[in-house]
Image (tube, rainbow, N blue to C red):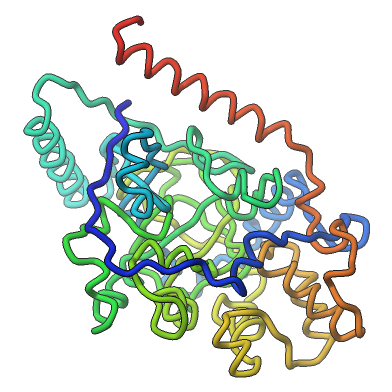
Length: 400
């Protein structure tokens, strides 16, 4: 498998990460599982099976089209060489490359299959032009519980503040609709000049889809692959709250005019999901919603409740707030499918504030249970990545 380097346009405006938002990358406090509802992998699987078996939750109302979205691109992490890192340090933020997966053969849609094969042929021809002598093999996009995409270490596996596996952020989805909205913005479209986001996505996502509005998704929605072409099952856990590194990545300033703030206030940064059942994913596959357990808690509703109703200062700084009653806040925190980081954790901070307690004085284990999780999985995959890198290097030098 060959790693590809992405040639990104020069970023003309670079700003330091805003200190008020840096908090979200350095302060991951937690609550013990005994104090706050948490969901084990086995429990999630059992809950999902029972939900999926309930026909009333399967969106099968006569005459109503099921909620779905189609996979347009799958992306893995690009690991830069030391030379590339020195030359393009800023552009290397959230660097991804498009995986060259095998064509999806869907017997129910010959046109889609033909299009996929045409795309694969054109991409293969492009690779041949770059390097006629190098043979390009298909890559396997296998998604598994806890870590998501096998063979790549994303932030949710090893973040800057704690050695934890955030299984509720196993997949970051982004949509073509979100990108097109950003491209239509007069002051932000320049961020994407000379960039084909389908080949070189800029939000750090693993999957780009189309055919879905973020407002149609809710916490706990379960999606399966249409037609049983893969056993993969995912569960929506949270909107993606963009960090200030998005400003650095796209070359915009911090504050109201930055792409971070615009994406934050318009839900354009994507959404997270956990993997309930492992399976391979191919471009052209379609996710179909099979369970909708929390219709009240759409991504738009929870975003508005926790981040959009604060003071102008809180809103401008993209930090959480709570101006509703305590009961609804407790309901939010109790959602078993909701992601911890930036959602349940922030909800608990607001709950402590309602009780007159400064959350910074609270034991770390009282805000974020994921920071108490064992690190064996993380270490295993880190060692695997190191071995893969060494084998590739030895092959490049002709030793293997």
